[in-house]
Structures are given as structure tokens and as C-alpha cells.
Amino acid sequence: VNARALTRPRQRNHTHAHISRVRCAAPENTGGGTKQDDVDDDVFRALDAVLGSAAATVTSDEDADVPTPLVMAANVEPKPSQYAKDRPDPLDGFEVADDWFGLGPKWDVPHGALKTFLTMISIDATFYVAGFLAPIAVYSTLRDPSEVPTEAEALTKDLQNVFDDPTSFSDIFLTAEVMQIVLGAIVLGISLAPHAPLPKGWFNDVFSSDAPEHNATGKSTSRARRMAITKAQDERRERSTNEAGVAILGTLVSVSIITALLYLAGLRGGEEQTGAASVDIIEKAFAAGPHGVANLLLTTVILAPMFEEIIFRGYLLPSLTKYMPPSFAVALSAVIFALIHQHGIGDTVQLLAVGVACGVVYSRTRNLGASMLVHAAFNGTVIALFA
Image (cartoon, rainbow, N blue to C red; front, side):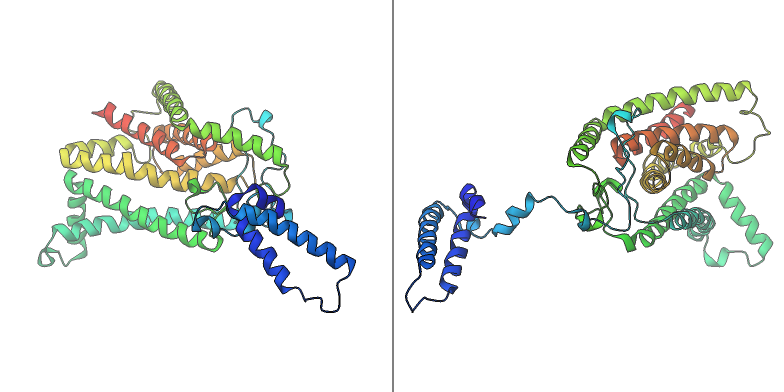
């Protein structure tokens, strides 16, 4: 403590005061001092002289109010027993030299497979709930209560007419997306609330804590290895924009090749394909004019990329790394991302490529902004090509 006090001026007066208190608190020797007492007094006098002169260099009250233990704790390495005890160290077995794709180590996942499954099922259910409620919400703004048909068949037909109208459809499309985001955020919040604050590395560390008791990362890994892993990740994070640019270019090239092959195989462009087609949605939005295009851009280029990247890359991909390497987690999360849209085979294959690109760039940079940029760029390019 004294050595630190001598090398850190802002701590000296506190150390000196502490020693003075110790000395004052010591019982006085009224029966004649021993040789040891004399030595102790000499030590105290020497320390008082040195630390007292050092304390004179303190220049502000702010410096004088910093407790010594805080500075000491800053350089103390947490003990393994201080880390989260219910999870293994995700850095175990990871070597930077063997990380060919630069995907980084696994995430520190505080929840289990069952919770991940139930969370994703619940979020998927919100898509259907929003798809059911959005037309009703828009319909209620277009019809006066006195105009609403009382017969079920007539009401169904009137609802269909509203849905078929391009302008109304674009409003339904936007409303459904907003509802999905609100409901999905509620589900995700309920799922993760018991684990808050989250370990480092989740959702760009917005809801994370670096306190050892909330983390398992590094508890059984040497400091040198941790520093090497962190250095590699930080370098990729700093290049997030470049990483996203490469991913965007790779996505557009791969999607172009995939689309050409699908046309050659007769799996795109025909009437026989099943599932929804993104081109139908875009065509309907353009038919609504500027209002429809604005709703389309807001939904597909801003809201959808933000929400879907938080769910599929921010939550699902890291959760999967608890049971598989990041490369497998990227692939599986991309498959789930593509299938959950329930589009035709052509769009599904394209979405698979987009999911892989977003997963790779997020895993490499650990920056959701980069994967959102890739997702938004793809959606925007599809709309621009249609225009």
C-alpha cells in the first residue's frame, strides 16, 4: 500500500492519514517503552516524514477524496472463483491461429437450449399475431363503426377489399412490422430479464456487465491468450464498415448467381412456386405510389433489418454457440432465418445467402450495426432493381 501511495500522488494523503489513525489508535506505552516499541516509533516517524511531505504535493480536494483501495483493485486480476460458476469458459480450446474464418470464440451463454427454443417459437408466434391484428387495426381507421357490415360474410369481403387496395396494404405492411417489433421485444425482454445484466459480448454490450460474477469468459484462460483473442476481435470490430462492404458485395454476387441458377432450373418465375414472393409485396407497394414506396422503404430497409438482426444474429446465433462452433451456428441460424419467412423456394435460397453473410460479418466484428447494414443493403438493392 505504501509503495503504491508513493508512486500515486493522489493517494498519498489518504495513506498518510490512515497511518496516523493507526498510530493514534495504538495504546500508549505508559510503563516504559521496549526496544521493539522504539523501533516501531522510528518506523512510524520515518513514514510520517516521507508520506507527510508527499501529501503536501496534493493539488486538489478531488485528488484527496479518492480511496486507495479503488486504485489497487484496478490492477487486481479476478480469481477463477469470482467468475460465474454455472458456465464453462467459452474461450476453452479456442486458438486465434486456428480461426481460419475469423469468426471468433463462442459467446458466454447464460441460458439453456429449452429457453432458446421457447423464445424463438414465441417470437415466431408474434409474426402471426401481428399479421392478424394489423389488417383489423388499419380497417378500423378506414371504416366508421356505422359502416362496418354486421354479417360475417359481408365483413370478410370488406376486409379483403381493404387488404387488396395497394394503399391500405402498404399501411398494413408497416403496421404489422411495428407490431412484430413491439411484441418481439417484449418476448425477448421477458426471456433475458432473469439473466440481466448479460455477459460481455451480447447486443453490442448495451445490456452487459464486465463484472466477473456475470461472466464466465476468461476464468480458465491465461491472460496472454485472452489478450490475443481480444486484440484480434478489436481489430475486426474497428474494420466493421469494411467487413460489411465485403459482405454486401459477396451477398449480391452470390444472390445473382443463385437467382440465375434458379431460373435455369425453372424454380423461379413460374406460376407453380409456393409461398409468398417478395416481388408481389414490392409490386403492390409501388402501385400505391409515393406513400406505398415510403412505407416499403421504412419497413424493409430500416425496421426489418434492425429487428431481425437483433433476433437472429443478436440472440439466436450466440445462443447456438453454447452447443456448437460459431461456424455451425452461423449456418443453422441462417437456415432458420430463411425458413421462418415462409417465402417461395427462390426467395428462401436468396435469404439463406443473406443469412450466412449477416452471420459471418456479425460473428467476425461482434457489431450488430455491421450485419444490419448488410441486411438493409440487400433489401434496398432488391427494391432498387424492381424500380
